[in-house]
Image (cartoon, rainbow, N blue to C red; front, side, top):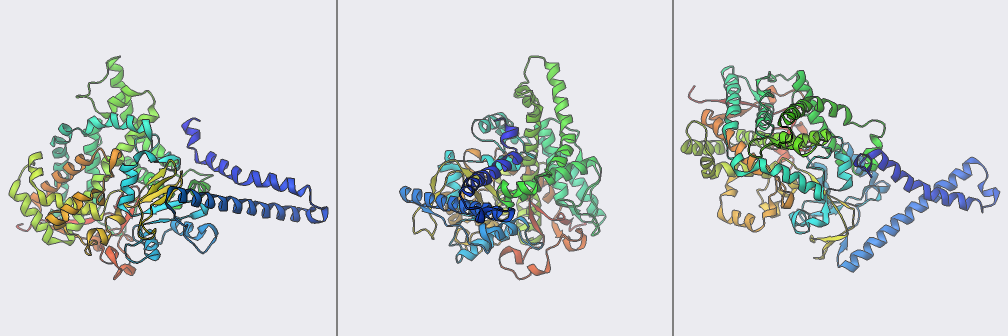
Length: 598
């Protein structure tokens, strides 16, 4: 079946409904022909019989599937996880609460609450959500993540459900495909993250100078700046040149949002005007829709809610209007080359994409995927690093001392960055508390086994084939049994203390902000180098970061009063972390950077 049909959620939903209703309705019609007319005549009686037979058919199917899974689990020596028991049939109440999270909720709070309600402390690490009588495993267990991402990599894939969720946003790009297609995408993209490329800091410096100019201007006018916005522009412009050979984005040359509590909120920060604002709004809405669909569960739920209107369509058109000129320019260059392909050492990613395929939709999808990774991952890291430095002036002072020791002024080299252990510790600790991708998922290709948790009496967990597994790096990287009683605290020293570092070295899946295994993020080193470079340049100039969220963020951006005194980070957070495909701060992160000697 063509992919546009195979991953069409409407067709999938219709097939599911046909499978649910046609067999029981045929059985009902056959049975009713044998019943006396007294029991089957009339619309009401016939409808009642059809309903009862449908319910009986569905119940038998559910019970049979449960029996089959329990039986297979026993034969494989594992434990089939029982589904959660909600208040409504099919855990519909749980599905609805996840689809419409609390207006004042903290990121992933609903799932954290479920883990807590099933056991004390960090005892329960994996459970079966079981909405609409369908198995969905949820885990914060690093051993399960290791199994899916590495040990039994071939037993898991992204699967049909994820493809349907992301088709309207990420299309057939690298993040949504499996198997041979995924390998082909990675093979094409990998050369652009080769060591010699990611160690070339010239591109970073050009755009860092623009960032510093904006920060100095706001310092001189005593105004705060939305660092989430400025870092997003920085990573977009740098990625545009580094990967796509384009120096025309120039988002850092466009007007920045002013500090104003009455500003209109966009999907993440202040809503921006103009063509760039339209693109960013659409770009961020598409990622927001993907995560909303994931939280709503299977396509049976979100597909029904979007049956008459695909929420991604209008935003995809706005993204296309921004990306398509890049593709057109690459096609012009391709025509100039004739039959000669672009030299791998000279061309950019778009040039190589158009050499590989004439499928413009595929080129567009790959660009969207790489844009999302190159822009959002590093921008998220930089934003939350700056936020945490605002809250921890002692860490800020130690970090600035290290920066001035190695590179008191001017652009750092790759060797300079390698020497700065404390800078790497600060970045790692930020990634631990606020991983850019806090939620991810896989689907089991076949029935297999996962590592046990304390609720299964040391027996491995059986997982049926075709089961979605939601896994949460954010929740795992804050587990106190893994990271100690101070797991919710920002402490870069844990990355320098030899005993703690040895524990992480022995158990590397405790920390997976860039995923792991064969599909580990290709841009990991690029992100570390880019983030290190600009933080060094900023800390050479500014010695004090002051958070101005209460004074300058748009109304509705600050944490609700109900958070005060709550356990974990929720009770101490000064910003509102939210989640699309990547983590972000609601309303932006407003900071005033200053120089003490001025």
